[in-house]
Image 1 (spheres, rainbow, N blue to C red):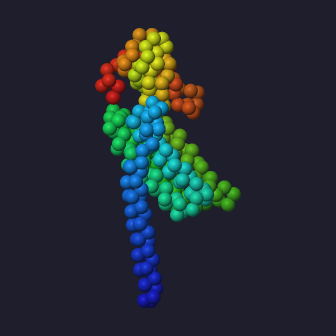
Image 2 (cartoon, rainbow, N blue to C red; image 1 turned 90 degrees about the vertical axis):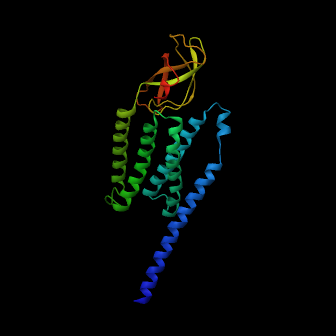
Image 3 (cartoon, rainbow, N blue to C red; image 1 turned 90 degrees about the horizontal axis):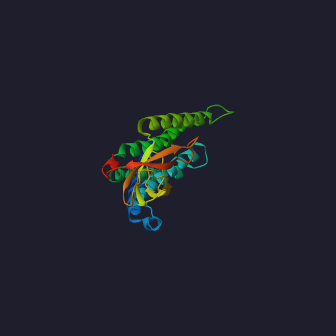
Length: 238
């Protein structure tokens, strides 16, 4: 019995060491990623820093979700799947940072990224508890859960946070006017400079409210179409 107990204790110590090593690695990698910045590359292309933070959160979240999908469908070994926790941890680290740049819309960004981190965790838990649905369709339950989760989450998010407008800054007046837009997850708008109908005579430097239209299936986000009116910079933060 003594030898069995010794083996058990050794296994527990080995597991504890593995967990502590993984946590230590995660902390070191998070500290390391804080020192790395690709922002100068994006800055040269007119991308604001707050859009860069959103981009990093998106990439980390999508990579974590992709790793989870590969794992549950048997394309990624558990040891590599564990390393993907770094991606999830980095995304969680960035979510509070978004409050500094999107104070009025922080809850929307928080729920969006937590929602997609949640589906990754849910799929892994289901895979561990129900490895196979049946011999013919072993992963059918994972596919059904994924589709149902995404549809329900999208409906919830659009219903709670969705809106048909965003804000921008006029960089060149006239009609059409050139307007610089930032990421707006509530309006599903990407950053960039767009030419917009300007019937309100918005001038250079003015912050404006912009109408957006959704595509039929909203696969590429929304399209900014026209300036509605000028607003104060404070209003654009709420």
